[in-house]
Image (cartoon, rainbow over all chains, first blue to last red; front, side, top):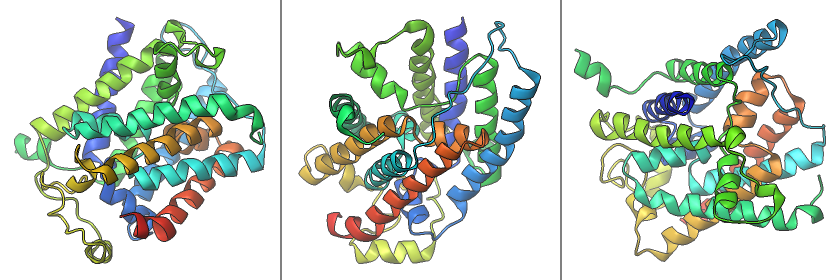
Length: 137
Length: 187
């Protein structure tokens, strides 16, 4: 039952990513060329509305429907690691022309070849686990 | 009227509000919005033995349903009720694409301005290299960063976390480097 709820929220996510045009390879190129406000508007609105939601969750100690408390993981501040890791991800975001969520939505949109990108991401994740002890964290 | 509504793309503010709603709905059901952990789950499900990949159904199972739903949602919004007009790209971007030999919106035979066909051809080695290379960096980078756009740019920034802000700055350093220095030679 619970799993169906997550499926339903996922459907809303897929519809949102498609109708927002955030799954467009061209929109991502346009964003990184700083030639459109569109993508910044989407992320900016989500964060502006997300801030009061998260603050309210924290202050009210909001419990999930089944009574668990919801905690967002907090990372220790390691500026070099964040910038370096973010840069690696950003290179991939611009090369693939999509970030992880939209990859799945693109497959649903009929762009089946995008599963190759997903396969590459699984491979990258696996390799990270192999070399993580040698990377600055 | 309803039909027109179902086919129309959304204004960025509506899209952003919908993402915030998704963040809330997931939290209300006990989960934190973040997509890239799925790649780690896939490794675990595929049998990778490193404890890093341990798949715990109670903790991770929801993500499989969420992303299966994302595909269904993409099918609804993109195949059943597509916006048949191509994305209204900035003319400057369109001119730059033309310089690279990519016609817009013609390069996407679906006519929706979502993805150039050339980068999605099963028999095109360049498409494979870009897809695998881009995917590799996404997977490696998101695990190294402990999150992707959803976990850091949406959830982390909403949580006012400095580590997430630095990570998002990194996203743009990488994205700007790729787009301005490497992509013109790759495409």
